[in-house]
Length: 164
Image (cartoon, rainbow, N blue to C red; front, side, top):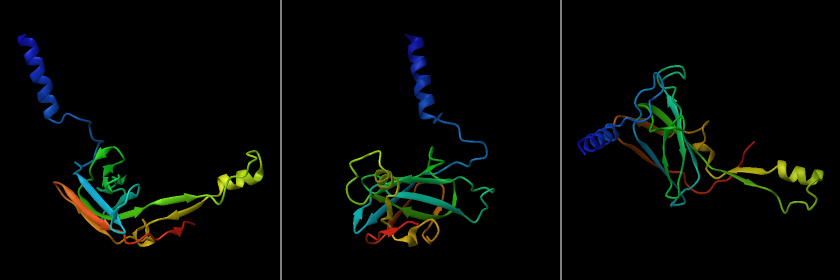
């Protein structure tokens, strides 16, 4: 019984001490980041949020890409390298995109035809977010610091434009 209590205390201590996944070599400690995205006054689900490091070269201290998809509440809980919760300290531009794929009309009945292949392989792709929030154009900034970090980003009204 004494050994069982000791083993239980050891397991609980290890769980509480944060003995979790080891960070990659050279990666600074990430801190929690949540980006809340709204469009037309409503939470935007399924948008891709990307944090673009600023001020350091990609080979420098802040080479750790971060991002996430928004959930049904419009929240993107950011992860570094799509794996480690949070983002490393530093300054970032915040980009938001939500691509919509549409195919014109109904598919041709003959699935072996060239028409079906063209219909399937040439969808129209639209971005539901104004291009001023794109990775190339965004001016939205976020500074990630020790502790919890949050930002609400209102991307305005639905503004579909065709991707090239």
